[in-house]
Figure (cartoon, rainbow, N blue to C red):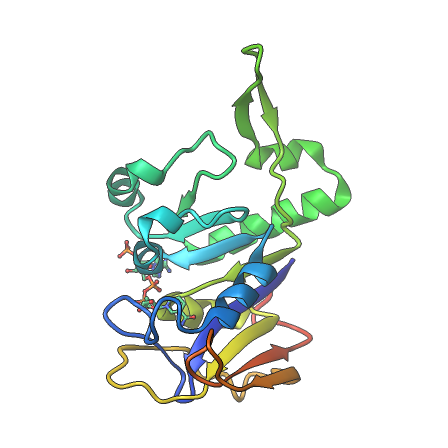
Length: 221
Ligand SMILES: NC(=O)c1ccc[n+]([C@@H]2O[C@H](COP(=O)([O-])OP(=O)(O)OC[C@H]3O[C@@H](n4cnc5c(N)ncnc54)[C@H](OP(=O)(O)O)[C@@H]3O)[C@@H](O)[C@H]2O)c1
């Protein structure tokens, strides 16, 4: 299982303020498009605050298994009942331990690649067919690659497990940020691709897409 961190930061690594992004919701559309394209079909792991920062009408992020980390699963589960639907393919999963979550996702990914149906069914969702018969189906997501989508607390803790960082740099320095992407310069990541773009009518600030990869994570699961 390959673990990606995906983020957008300004040139000083700032990623947010007051539980929101630093740039307007639709001011960097190419980044939103890239985020959607890269993460589609995969599990996305986020902290409780990032979950809450996503407008209700856009969550869970469609087409991706949404997984939320919180230390108080009971409180979080009841407060987000409106969008929590455990029996549905797009219901969210809640976990209280990052390493246990990643280890379990790796087991699931291994089960999918080796065809271990019994293990695959640990992630089964229960469905009812049109004629009322209940059954179990394995998840249709691609567990061979998972994305850590923030915020700063989760990036910081997940960095040691990451194999790749998909980072958009917004070419600007925003005022008064309160959260940052962690510094990873000495962690054996190599920049393997970079594309730079000017601002335009869909992107208020110039931006660049960077891919950083490393052979082995600092801590394997
Ligand atoms: N620019 C970007 O790419 C980007 C991406 C994502 C987010 N953001 C921004 O980042 C900010 C949010 O980041 P944040 O650092 O404040 O919060 P966060 O990382 O999204 O969430 C923090 C919460 O996650 C839970 N948590 C943290 N570590 C945990 C662990 N080891 N086990 C279980 N649960 C754990 C705790 O939830 P409980 O308190 O419920 O226990 C904690 O309060 C917002 O401003 C958002 O807009 C930016």
